[in-house]
Length: 618
Image 1 (cartoon, one colour):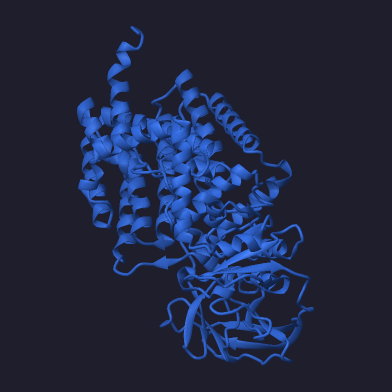
Image 2 (image 1 turned 135 degrees about the vertical axis):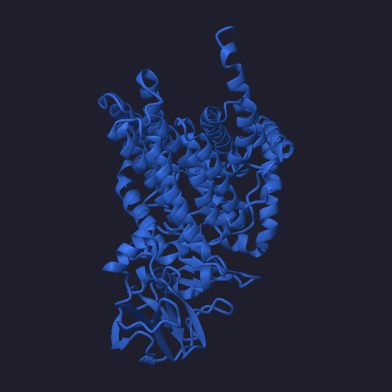
């Protein structure tokens, strides 16, 4: 005990910050919205032993269930609680280490760290890595401590690559820059970082029961999800035009702070600190401004605020850092972030921690909580019991998004790989879903929900090739009851695709949709020439691409078009005898079609090719 006595103030401070900034407030039930569905699915996937890549793909990987503890299955919830606890301890320790240097007081450091840790607690991995990387590159950790820190950064990178790939890439980049830029010998830190990253990556892959044969599928699919995000998921909330400019200004200020923090260091370390800041600012900017709304914007301002704290050790820069930190905090709150009052809820957060700890360490309480969460979800689903009799023991995919239904109703899950179809926004991802829908190894039935489409898209165009495959390999079964319809696998219903006509048009020019050659054929369109390419590809990599819209019947309906899947097969018309019943009809009943790019008011020039085809259907 005597050996721990010198560390007692630090340990007490860390524990205080962790308790009073605990990031998971309230009960551990998944929300009943789209986010709750994919969070349940991540737990379902690890419980069922599904392989990432061939079996399922999403923004999160095989350790994605660690993102947040949820009452879905007992052990995933417990492991997630442990991981969130470890991450919050690391975040609190990093913030306190920097703030203690800057403020020269444990009490002040704790008071400032609590709201910072609260802001960053929902996704702390990047800021934890940045604080550690800045300390390593800034020469604050040398010798054995430096090796341990490099190994810790590597382990965090390996785990984050399996939790959420884009965060893992950011953490890996931060760690790589730090071990190369750190003053002194580089060989030891580089080996420690690389070895720990490889061990964590391999260990996480094995522990979650992943197949090594699926590694390539996982990497290519996950990279497709990352690369396609900036082209397909763009969104601009009104009245927030000032925020990108504020972000650019704060990013530049942070780069200056990073450069000045390294003035007394070797040039390699000084440049490394600036590169670390560039990685943090760029990746946070991408996370915040592709989908530009209040929730995403706060990712940037909170991340750079946490990053700025990391320079609290820099000599003669404390007042500057504090003033800039105040500026960042004000900007964060002005952008629609949480109110200052909501940041300081210490009693509520501490109560949540102890209640969740009690719940997850008591087996009967855990099971009772899971049962209550399942009942809550089932009530939301409004799922008619007649479906259960019709499904029996057959495997199920849920279309388009509500994968939580499988868990709530105790069904056997066999998803299309991109199990929420709005994320199948590249040709490869869409083709993977279509292949699984066609395959006899795919789901035996599909539960299709009539729901509002994501980002004003066309329901029949969500993973469009997969929708065609569902139409051609499934027939309506039980229902519709309420907002649900059962589709049952059948013998192939469609003949080969045959050309109807090809039309080259200008952007904005309306083209007549050809009629079906007979009453038992569907009409399909492939839209070519609207993919993101050339300079726009660079723009998308740095920020985001321009949007594409599809315009039916001269403005009767204007919907989002996903450029990555535009050249795949899209259903336009379906004969009534082969279509699904209302409100699930796939027939769009349109006579003309056009594509616009960017804002609807923009007068952009460009060519687009509409390749119309047909397929007979029984």
